[in-house]
Amino acid sequence: MTTLPNDTIIALATASGVGAIAVIRISGPDAIHIVNRCFNSKFGNKDLTKVKSHTMHLGHLMDEKRTVDEVLVSIFKNPNSYTGENVVEINCHGSVYIQQEIVQLFLRNKVRHAAPGEFTLRAFLNGKMDLSQAEAVADLIASNSAASHQVALQQMRGGFSSEIKDLRAQLLNFASLIELELDFSEEDVAFADREQFKNLVAKIIVVLKRLIDSFALGNVLKNGIPVAIIGEPNVGKSTLLNALLNEDKAIVSDIAGTTRDAIEDEIALNGVTYRFIDTAGIRETTDVIERIGIQKTHEKIESSQLVLYIIDGSKVGNDRLDAAENLTQQVLEELTIIREMYPQKRMLIVLNKIDVLTEGQLEILQDNIEDLLPISAKNNLGIHELVLYLTSLVNTGKLSSNETIVTNSRHYEALNNAFESILAVQTGIEDDLPSDLFAIDIRECLRHLGAITGEFDVDKDILGNLFANFCIGK
Image 1 (cartoon, rainbow, N blue to C red):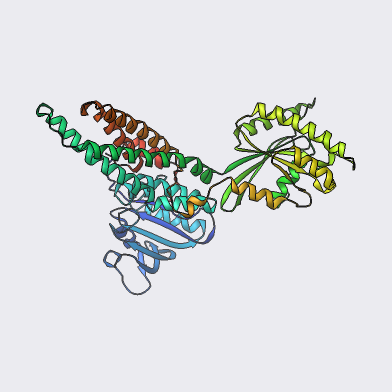
Image 2: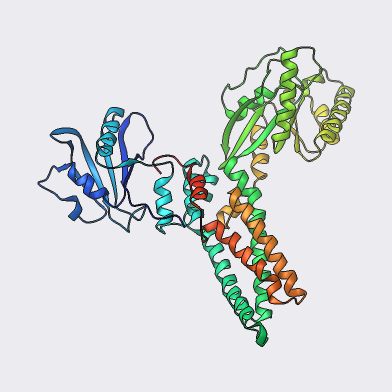
């Protein structure tokens, strides 16, 4: 097991750069003593080592006789701190020079720079949070939508951990009885009630399956939904992207082939992030640059979860109904080709430029093309209905019911491994196999569940890798 650190670390806890204030965090057994040596209170001589925990003190940081800055110092004494150690947070003025001066001051006083995520790593090692909660801290910092924020916050509060720990505790209890049976195998004694054990295994299978299935939603909430906007040149793909983003992100022109490369941007709709990708128009071309753009279009379709296929309603061009019928036939032929190329992709057919169509022409197109959504991106018609369709793709009802949602790929892998192990245990019980034949699978299931919360002997390198993606001050 990784040993507990005994040195003192420092890092900027707020974003780097100029601001009104900055917060510098120091953690370790000597944190309060070291800060106390450099601190002069504005209200008489004050010994920070003797003040109460969770108190704030105004004064000056001194580099020998030189005043570095007037600061507000917060004291958190172990074990009641974020890291479980003595922690001092220094609120200073937000000058980059002042920040650097304060950090350098303490580096000269036997404090070292914190590694990325080291404060949260210490919190984990000191039992302030388990591994899944620690990882949720990074997700909370990186959250960019209401949904991803809510899921990360729920996990950091321990909702997911509690469910896993409860399952593991129940399985561990029966595993102990099974191991005890193995010790008395010659006496042929049964300590574990097989019927109760069978019911427990069935319960674990149901819970694990639910958690595994939730990852599809969790991954969407955490990383957003990539949506490719495709179609022939000049059908209004860039205009639609600008309408969805409510800004002129893409160049709009009557000249075919204006978009040569994929243009991407994100927007949060009803708490869920969508990443829209405006692609080059799909057509036969001799232009080398445009051909590269079209190739990238196919790559973006491959990586997207939803495809918006845009049809140009202005192609009808007159009031004749047979013109709409001809466009319908052409679209159906093109859709057949695209769906054969990407059979697994969810696709929405969007009819753009409906402002130039008659009611009769629109009816022909809607009657013959399934799931057709009419819009006018230029005039902002039908955009609200398109947004409603996009938000209907994500079942955010689970968020309001506080159901546990898995967002971490490491957790997803561990749950799958645990699920396979517990299925092997269930098979062993149903086949009435001796305990020693499925005891190994029980241990494997316990190990995989423990890997989620950190209830196992974690190697130092593994922990270092897990916390390496944290920001420095966390």
